Image 1 (cartoon, helix red, strand yellow):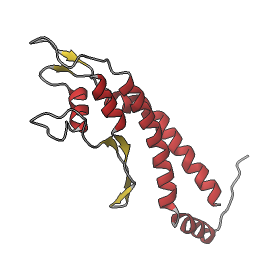
Image 2 (cartoon, helix red, strand yellow):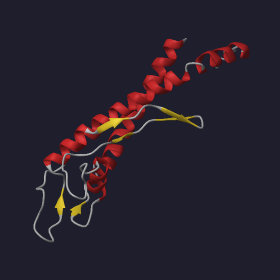
Image 3 (cartoon, one colour):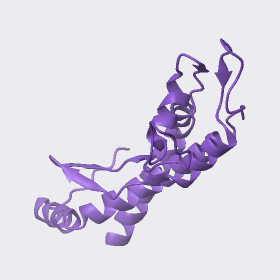
Image 4 (tube, helix red, strand yellow):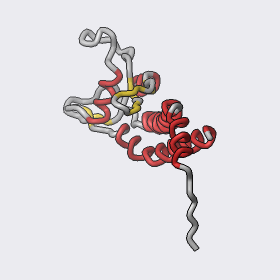
Length: 159
């Protein structure tokens, strides 16, 4: 037999209104929960990159990252603060700063985001080794699940 539960529209609107005041905190908690899972997977993928020598023979295609590049990727990876724009909440996981390899062309060191992009996409002398896209592929499902659970947990504690 079917069951029908009638809720007061006024109570429903009051409930939604009360929860919407804390929506930013709920969204933030959820986003950071998912970002933590993605960041952990990205760390694992950086550590799993094949180590290569600093340079190879002329015409040889190299693959992976040097030991120093892997260390720079790990130490310069981070999660941004949550940003709100046009009703959307975002945060980013990425690389910021420079490595310690100072050259005449790069007096501050190589930008770590450039190193990540070169490893991910490849160059004329470096085979692509997609570690960022592998992170997205492998961690998307678990991150989404963790975010859903966090929203449900936060929602239940708000009642």
